[in-house]
Image (tube, rainbow, N blue to C red; front, side, top):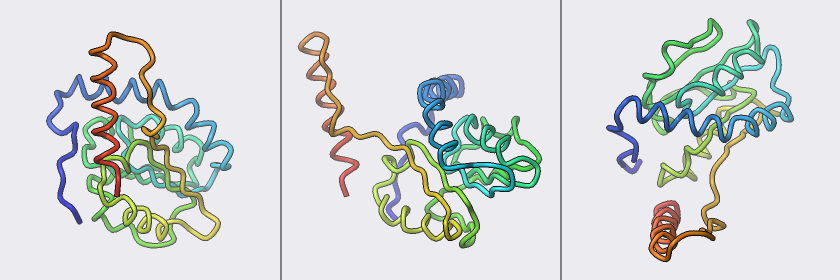
Length: 173
């Protein structure tokens, strides 16, 4: 396992919560739609990887009801602990090292997780062992190869291109 520093470690609490809430407001509607299409429903056992501020964790918890479960894994659980339902278990840990058993989940979901993990392929292999036969692996990850800045000053366009290039460099295997 490659040891690496998560880019948002050390972010001030309110700034980090604001960042996570912005991601939720931007991406939750489509995430919920994808998960609805997968069929998440009563009695499912689900894993939420990198639960962030907990919006999808809480939504899944409602969908699976009292007969289902949600396990949420994150290295930073400070925004999750106040909103835990009785069918939800919070695990503070790194998905690369935490032991969650095998063939346990109907759904494994994560968003913007793999881009932070250099050895993402081995993490995906591990996650494939976590879900039951017929289960679903739903990961939402950005595709920076299509990112283009179309409007702005020349300096802004160059800065955008440098950031995109840096992200592409760190996310290549």
